[in-house]
Length: 294
Image 1 (cartoon, helix red, strand yellow):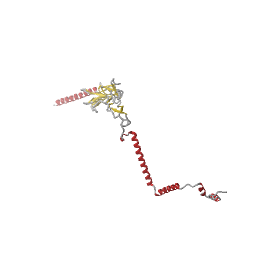
Image 2 (cartoon, rainbow, N blue to C red):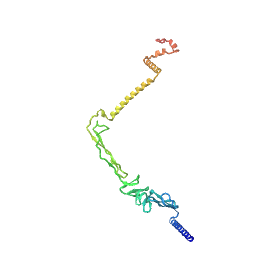
Image 3 (cartoon, rainbow, N blue to C red):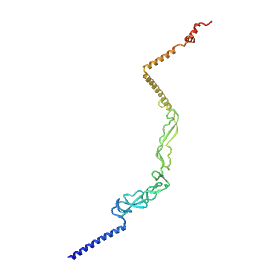
Image 4 (cartoon, rainbow, N blue to C red):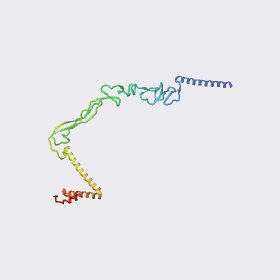
């Protein structure tokens, strides 16, 4: 009985040693394949390394290498960054860098946006556009040359001279057209949009409403003159209404004095002499008025 128990003990011990040795060999094999492999990866990594970052990505994510100085780190992203295009394989999805002159691309042979100094044409980046095309500096693409397009001529205007249709025999008439498409930088320029020619009509007198420019100017000047008169009379009335009774009385007195001075007859030189004050009156007493010295 004791021998049987001892034998079972040794069998179980040997079995546990065998399982431990298998786990240890599996760990050594994994470390030999991926040194410093970590099972608790973050940021979409399926497997990763402490030194190299992501080694593989989770499904539907793209694997891309980012350079940091002299070191490259693996990163898993939902879409490829600018300057890269994505390619899906059965075992991994990878981001591959576009060509040197391409800013964004669909694949290695088709660019969707060029870097500065290049023009996009049919998926390629060119230094200059091919013949028959011109460079659009706004979109940085090679586009077709656009020429100017104009509509047909409109009808001729009535024969006129100095803005009126009467009072002359020889005048001018004009017709116009519209620009339908403006040209591009290398396109053909647009033609004139108006033209004028001489016309001859039978002379007719102008009615009152068609006196022309000079008649309208005279009428406007007359109206302005009448308006100035009305405003000046109104201003005088306002000034008189603003005067005080004393001012009006003084003004009336001054006007009466002026009127009297104008009506008073002018005196002769003899009358002025007798109105002089002494001592001239004493001297003149010796010579009465109307007598001369003997």
